[in-house]
Length: 78
Image (cartoon, rainbow, N blue to C red):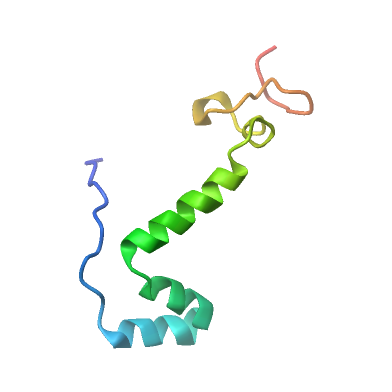
């Protein structure tokens, strides 16, 4: 599969798009989509940082940067 990099959307979508989002998913998600790309990325980084702890990562398999051999984990190498 060819890798296509994600690039920021500098041009907003037509207002009809955001109205559709609001009808289908609610006002909060439509408001989120209306935020500038940079602001959305800053918020996502803040949220991600709050979960970026050793305890949280220990529940992920090694190929995703976690420790599958942590106590309480199943399927890890013995």
